[in-house]
Length: 122
Image (tube, rainbow, N blue to C red):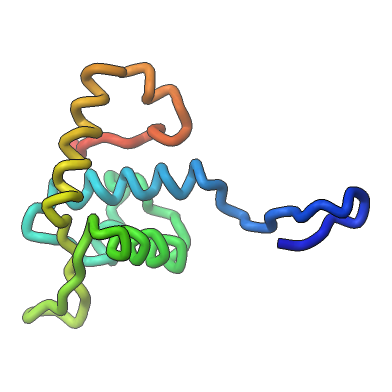
């Protein structure tokens, strides 16, 4: 945070809004829900259907780390590739199920930026 010279108030210089971060978190949760055995970071990063293609690598890593810290995602070393495998926790699966229920009950939520593009992959 930096003080604005005109007002003396602090301004947030973060380039990503909380809405955009939440949107990415929702997309990761649903991606994990569809990949029950787990996924590697590169797969979600490169697949256009994930909804996070084009996101900066560090931003994706930050969102994954947050979801791990919040107990919604776990990470383990793969036996076959030199990458971590990310898997939704039981709580993460419960949240994914609720998101899908919200989509049925409250389709209007998908007009909000937080839910824009959040969906199961066709």
